[in-house]
Image (cartoon, rainbow, N blue to C red; front, side, top):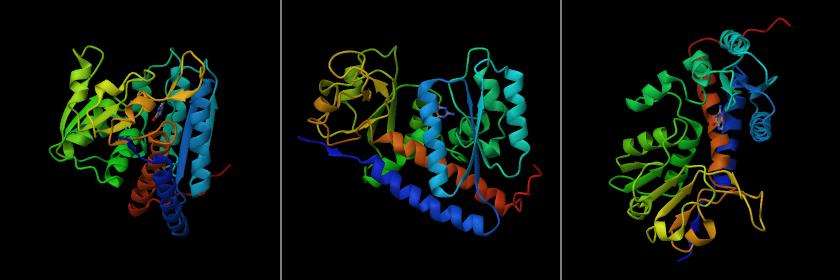
Amino acid sequence: MTAKILDGAALARTIRAQCAVRAAALTKAGTQPGLAVILVGEDPASSVYVRHKVKDCEESGIRSILERMPADTTEAALLARVEALNADPSVHGILVQLPLPPQINERRVIESISPDKDVDGFHVVNAGALMTGEPRFLPCTPYGVMKILEDAGVELSGAEVVVVGRSNIVGKPQAMLLLQRNATVTICHSRTRDLAAHCRRADVLVAAVGKARMITAEMVKPGAVVIDVGMNRIPDGPNVGKLCGDVDFDGVSKVAGAITPVPGGVGPMTRAMLLVNTLEAAERDHAAGNPPVAKAI
Ligand code: GUN
């Protein structure tokens, strides 16, 4: 079997085009959507991600504000910046790029973002809303994965779904979203006994562990849908440094029914869903009668 490729890059292009239409309509109505991105330090991978996010905004008609802060920024200084952005009516979404330097408590920073501007969906209020089935902002990666599955027409009701990874950003919210679609969800992690046996039961397998090519062909049920959330660099060999996922694509694509590639699968969808969340935030704000006031500079 050769798996169907689930083209996240193409789907993301469609979603970005839809976002551009929504952003133009909202801007015409008096509210230009605005996203503030804070990058603390100069982590190379984070710098690339942030640059892409800002570029996506520009191309969709969303105003973006990129704030760079030095690596030795104190927690108090970062909290003060977030507070100012919370109070700025021209900013509808705030994203603090993770990871943060060790002197800063990540949780405290996430909780300082107004839940109404938390376009990452990481705030405890938004995580709780997802848990109780009334989500406001969905974390972008799991949201993007759900869109890929929906676009591919994957039946989730009653399906055996295995999520490998239990992070707050991906694994846990992903499991919740799948549960809401009536899948039977198993979350596997580093202490799971016989990971391969769990994975082999899966009709849909979501790999979100952060380990290059750890899901191999023998761990996949023939015909399964495989979603690869991983973004790793190949540690050694002839392709050292090249981007790869958590799934051994060459082997698994011969067994699976459908698979997302890396790059070009989940990554572009994560970025697209950030635009969707920012638009949601701006549309809600506009509907509440809070168009941005001109800022005195
Ligand atoms: N670092 C890696 N992924 C993400 C993300 O989705 N949001 C934020 N804020 N930081 C990240």
